[in-house]
Amino acid sequence: ADSLGLALRIDPDNAAAHRDHGIAMQAMNLSADAIASFDASIRLSPNDPFTHYARGNTLLRAGRGGDAIAAFDAAIALRPEYFEAIHNRANALRELDRLEEALAGYERAVELRPNVALAAYNRAFALQDLGRLDEAMVGYKRAVALAPGFAEARKARGGLKLLLGRFEEGFADFDWRLKLAEEAVDPLL
Image (tube, rainbow, N blue to C red):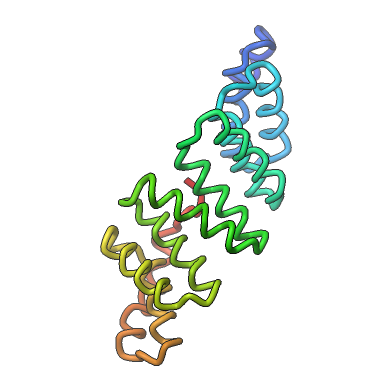
């Protein structure tokens, strides 16, 4: 971060340096500083979809879901098939309890990259939130098939099996919750 600060003092109109400074601030959990850096980068180079995406992630982690959606929308407008922005926009929608819209986003993400376990898992989670349990089970099975060691997906699948009264199968999957501390899955891409 120090070398980036020096680079910005030497060349304050360097959009990439502002963006990189924002990424460094984001990594240190300094959301306000990260957002300010991303904003500076966007003022200088408004057509960089990655900067809008990174800003959206920072806003989402800071609990500003509505603002995050706007940032992800800007990224997607510049790059319509931006898988990560589409996926994380759906995360923001889910956090705002806009479940149908979140599901549509996850479905688009899965359509773009059908072999990404996290997207399949989040789609299943949204389906479960909407009470579409049979579809959610299929989604969890897909996520586990894509990543057999994905403890969060196995735990969620186990919880759904327990909810459905399939206790023996459910406990076998639900016990994967013990591995969650080892996994530390970041919900954002």
